[in-house]
Amino acid sequence: MHYANRRKQVCEQFMQLTRAADYAVRVMIHLAGLPPGTRASRSQLAEAAECPEQFLSKVLQTLSRAGLMVSHRGNTGGFELPEKHRSVTLLQIVESVEGPIRLNACLDEDQSCPRSGWCAGHLVWAEAQRAMLEVLRSATVRELAQRSATVRNFERISGEEPKWN
Image (cartoon, rainbow, N blue to C red; front, top):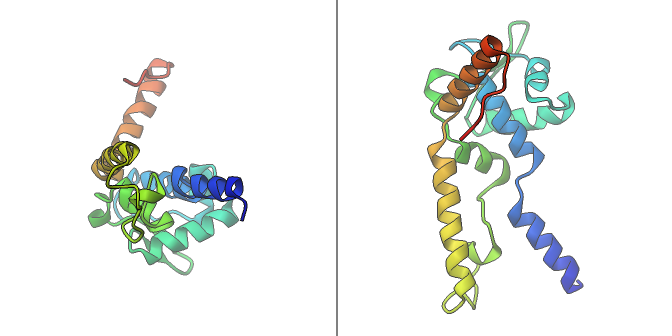
């Protein structure tokens, strides 16, 4: 394989979350904002996540298999986020869809990078990796759902968009 093509594949593989991970996070935040015990249909979740329904089916299956949400069949079926799962972190969601997140191939524990012992870049990648994982690990869907509700209420009352710090 040509070096430029290989390099492009590695960058794409390690540097960007997929749409599936983004939709999974959106769905989980939406479910966390619903009252406990509430079930949402696939079409309701697709609308809330602004995602094609067919594509979302695979994401929902992945989240259900990972045990992050509960899927119910039948006329009263749908998807539910039980109270015990409302503390799920963004890291858990993203890794359930994508697998372990690595900013760079040299950070993969299964592969030894021959440069890691002396490469100054490796130190920066490792520090950035730790910071990213900590941010994703500290954000729960419950907190984000509460923040979303606050923003929606602010917009409804004031007619303005809030300014994030």
